[in-house]
Image 1 (cartoon, rainbow, N blue to C red):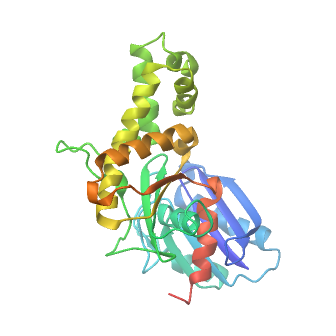
Image 2 (image 1 turned 60 degrees about the vertical axis):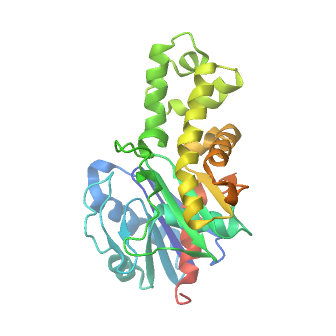
Image 3 (image 1 turned 135 degrees about the horizontal axis):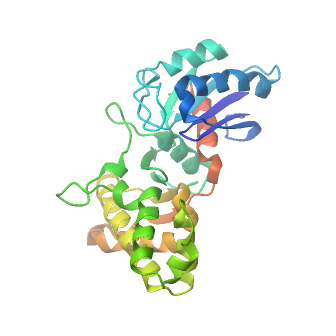
Length: 305
């Protein structure tokens, strides 16, 4: 059996399964950020025996929510939980499991899952964008994560949208969209978006699609802006990397088809004529399993790369 682990700022998932990404067993835990990295490592130590039930772990891979050195297995840092900076997670986990280990950024890992068995299956290359507490990216070419030079993460969230330094995360991350909805609701209290999101203290983006369906001009304009901002950023990805498919994942992707259409329209506007039609835009198919499935696939690649 292979072990796949997702380590995030609020969620920890461990799965046992096959090299093709099939999940057989799962442990899911909530993360207490106040306990830091050591608290998460304690959860992992306790969860593996429960999950394994005596099964031999042949290989292990981790999708970590932050920048990593994939060659050494060392964590650079976590932007959400203290106690991870310069931690040698690969060595620690290999000692714990007595198995070879790969450490990857979570967006790279989720991108591998979507490219091999998710919305990008059969397409090549595949670029994955996760729209959550941040905006991450991963490029998969010929079924393998493309790294480039270390640290080797496709940080689309830090692409600048203007010369003043506005980055994609400040416009398209979940927290950014929530903030913009609050501001728009205060300025337009009679709008459907304001009425639907009234009283919410977080996660306001979940009301965006319904407000658009109600033909709310405030919501429609916001969705158009998000699509244009992300489409503009993805036009750079297209011009440089030429993916066949771009997959949208993360919490904001749950806005669904309306978001997909908006990004598709924005991308088409900014792609140069010679590269049209623009890459297909698809919604992630694996949902919450993108990173765990990607980790199993990554574990299955150990020894072949």
